[in-house]
Image 1: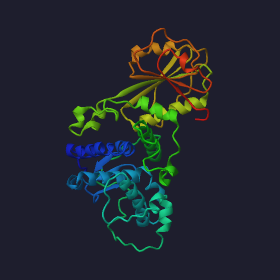
Image 2 (image 1 turned 180 degrees about the vertical axis):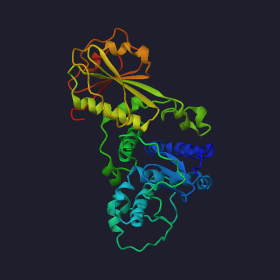
Image 3 (image 1 turned 120 degrees about the vertical axis):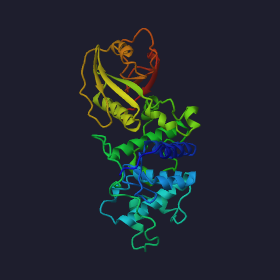
Image 4 (image 1 turned 90 degrees about the vertical axis):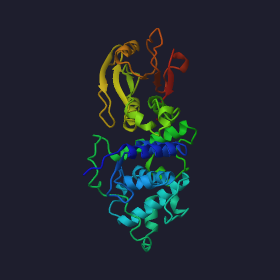
Length: 376
């Protein structure tokens, strides 16, 4: 029988997310992305690489910082694809190697790890494959006390998964890591990870380009964004649940007059889809435009990009005429900027995404200007 995700369980998870935000925007964003499911079949917690399963009674009995460390431990296993990467390797030794690395990260975040956990400053900086090889031939010192939280399948008391068609679990976590880097950069971090050049994170996530960070920041605004918590929810530790009731609607327009190449279209729309995958409350509608607007097309994470329409001259006014009908919260317009602008600036926040060779910033009469890199 599926255990219900009670308000008490959700409150424990939200409280942990909020506390971790005070330690690391990077790690807090990963927890925000994770789906936590109650299960009484796991000893304390475990992951199948997609979801994190938590024993609700155990979670309720833990000190707050211990619970935070436990949840972060499992989320890092999932984000770093430790289940998927095991392949034919021996399960218990692989789990011990992954635990050694993840516990090092948890400790670096200022959270406690289990007292019996093995620590090694050198091995903690390596990839899990390298640590696995280094453990070859070692005796199993901890018996069955560890090495069992990477699950081959969901517990039998877990509810069915709600799949995201067309998008692999690995891709979803790569998007979560990209988002975490963006949020970390926005909050004053280094924009890559709070642990420096950790080999596990370097292996799985390519460098984030600045224009992508700005796009995420523009699109991922919420009433309870990291930059300004809604105090009504903070006091109750439930700010994240507000995301379920709030949506952010984006209108995405692409200039198809011939001045924007296919690579730029794919790069921008692909990043928008990444935002949608990590922030379910964000909804996006796509239009193509030259002297007319063609659409609408609903965008979804991992979905096919609709084939472009148009190819004539450039007139921005048809898209801006749609704002009264769609009433989006933000407008993102990919164009080189050479065209006819509306006479008056709209009330809708506008982001102009401009490929190399486009109009200079001062040529845009309103809105923010974001420039794509030459090889971005």
